[in-house]
Length: 403
Ligand SMILES: [Ca+2]
Ligand SMILES: [Ca+2]
Ligand SMILES: [Ca+2]
Image (cartoon, rainbow, N blue to C red; front, side, top):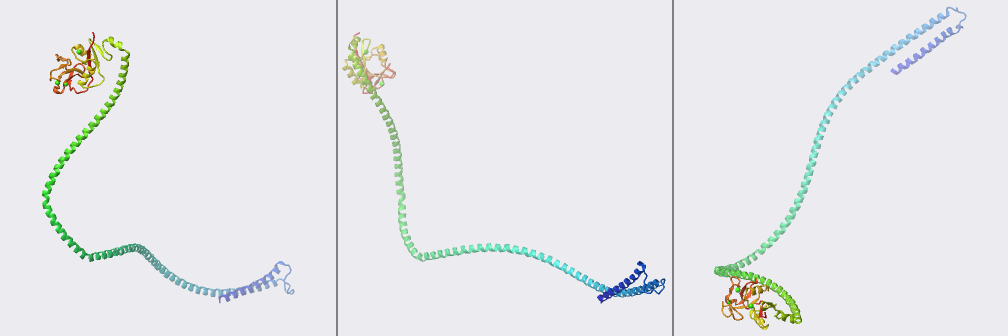
């Protein structure tokens, strides 16, 4: 109905426009041309435009009135329609408001539910994490239990083996028991024998202790003797070494002396007249009215005397301080012709004269008694000492010369 009303409005407006255009055409002709509307050239020229204008105004008024009425009807209907639409809209608005409030309420409820769900979700997540941890712990415990179970299985198998071994040993035990009983009886017999021997042991122990003490004493004595022998051996070894050295030195000296002797013999043969002029043989030295010979080797007192006798003299007889001082210049510990071999304490020269003075003896000499019966030049050469006649010493011969 609304669109029909609009269509009527447009048709009415088009008709009104056509009418206006027609009216305008007449006015136009009248205003812009000096030629008047010549429909009726018989009418008066002063009344015709007014009439036409009145007619146009009447037509226009009719047309305007009809248009206003039409518009009034049209807008009244439109107003009713709008009012109806507005009420419907108001109703819809109220419904929508109510729906919005319900939706707001639902939204709030949903928000609250969502928050509760979020809280529940967080709690569940936490519970899940705890469960995961517990699960992991359980897995670890299960693995440990599995390991323990395996160990227990292994131990059980070992125990089973041990049990089997023990069972076997138990079955063998009666036999072992019989053997042990037999051994025990033998041990009892041995024990009785040992008891008897033990009773005899104190006596044996005492005997053994005594023997041990004797052996200890013998051992100590042997140890002491061994030490002494070791010391003696060491001393003997040292003495032997010294003797060997002395022997070597003496051998060397002997060789040198032999050489000297040969040289002197040669000189003696070449100088016989010189020796004879001095009044002493070659190799002898002259002092006062005597010739003196000093040996270059060592012999016993008796052998020395015999050598002097062979040379036409005898062991030296010291009869004065001057002669003693001369003998001192020889600087040799040597035999002299004095002895108490025939009678202890009675010192006699080799010419059988008796010693008449003691001034040449060294202090405390003579002191040898029957052990020392021959006189010698003492170690400082200006006094005498009595010593064993079998000792080996150089010697001094004396024979008288012309003076
Ligand atoms: Ca003399
Ligand atoms: Ca004597
Ligand atoms: Ca002496």
